[in-house]
Length: 262
Ligand SMILES: [Fe+2]
Ligand SMILES: [Fe+2]
Image: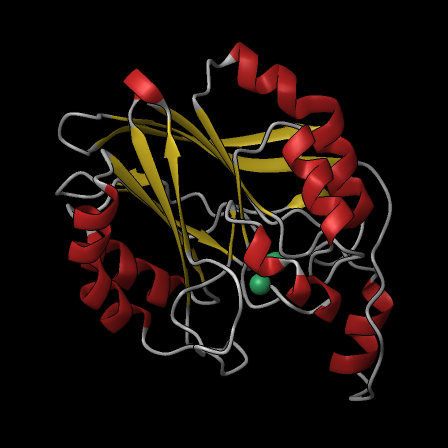
């Protein structure tokens, strides 16, 4: 099974590069399943219904979200009707929507996509992702009978992400970090066969900070004054990971970082 996972899509530049590049990439690389983290697609914070439909139309099979899942509160009313859009599972039971999604690819396998949220340096909204994983891993396998499991671990620190990688090693096919918007160069296959990267990176413009105009960050950090973030514009890049998964034993056999430019 060949899987493409696309890192946090940010605002219009992120959507634009997906629109122009994603389909051709999926065809060229014979991708069987495409998962896109889109938590920043709506002007940089959150997700909205039209953008969800757009991203599916560009080739995504599943959309995952993170701490900004409901930063656009309007999306709350759509969450229960979109079973292929998932938000982290280890959160308040009040959150609507889904925390995992099964992609049935026929002879290519059955990929279960799971979203988890970290606790370190993230606005406190998550229960322990480790305990949640431990409590759910057997249920995921029994209920969905997947050949492979992909975990989108949306977290800030490389240490928490590394810990999740080793914690889940051999139990899932992929642990892919998201949230920091900066791609890390540590992709690897862990000792028991789980493909891992600390952060996939983002899909949007690099003309700014994390896809946003720099002024708000400077005002907040240098001047210690409040400021509203606005999405930056400029040439975009798509940061992603391409992985090959064995559907017989669930192991990752290849993991590769991808950066595509406009
Ligand atoms: Fe993000
Ligand atoms: Fe995030």
